[in-house]
Image (tube, rainbow over all chains, first blue to last red; front, side):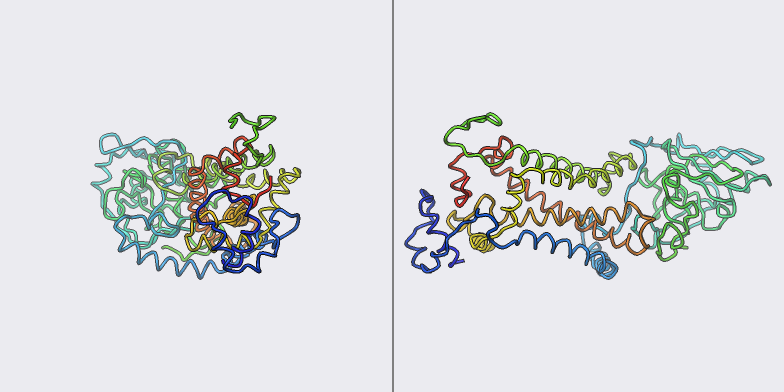
Length: 278
Length: 208
């Protein structure tokens, strides 16, 4: 600091018409010999190209970050999980991998439905098309499962309880015809669709979920009723479920038309190798 | 002190700081960066995501704004004035060391903060944000074209993209905060001219 200071003051002299900290006496007394070096900050190609080094260094760190990410991420996750427990503000939830769900909606706004106006319609290749109210669904036998939720974008929420009616029970009640091979789901957001093969839909770990984390499903989590496909990436678990149509063949859903895999097994699709959830 | 933009003959108390190319490169870059930040917030912060929805559209805007982010600077390379400024930003002299050490000591006296056209803090910021933008671009492309890269890379790229985004957000807030605190510096980028008094005070080693 001192050497540079001295060198600079010499050049700055004519410019220093004000400013209290710039007394020449103080400065020159420090290292007067340094003042010989002429300051020409604007001279062409003078000075050290530190800007370039900072830029390349940042690039290098970025590349290193990508290489070291798996290790860093594990450390960060365990640290943040610990911090989140003691965090009353909930701000840790906003940090990357800070835990918790993220809200994704494909439409600008989603109507709200409740026990009064919610309906779930089952139709298509069935003998008995049926429309259920929320009360109807609540009156049926409920199944509770506690498994991890894995999003295809990377976030994972461990040990999340879901509770609801097994989809297979609703399909059996409607009487699926022999020509059927798949099930298509529609949502009251007006845009989202999903589908499963009939075999997938009949798995015991596929629910029409009414509760999550031991609370009634809130609107932002897809309530009052959403699909829950435990073994697949979470985009299969359509929010705001309003229709179940039994069809012959699988039709690609909303995100699947945009490149995601239709058979979305966690750890075996979408080019990801996450640990299976179910 | 004329406040009119691009006054052909600035009053004697004004000095020319930026020409048209620098001003427009800064504006275009700021607009694209703004688009990236706003869309990122809508993708990432649950409350905003809930408010805005339309996830696919927001993703598209984010991707294209990010892709276009380096374009203004690259196009601006055609301008001699901009290349000269990049040279100023790149090169550090002894006075920049003085400035940085004073900044670390929180020494705010003018005399301990010598600066040419750009001070050392501005130089570091420019270099860092340029590098960080390229890292965001690279990791962003890995996340965008998922089927072109091996599995592992995408998760890793997402990790770097998320954390660097947070860092950039903080640094950018500092950049904007400092601009808000210095109207004359803002005038420099708006009109191209600054008062000589300001130039002498903030950039005493600068010879316009």
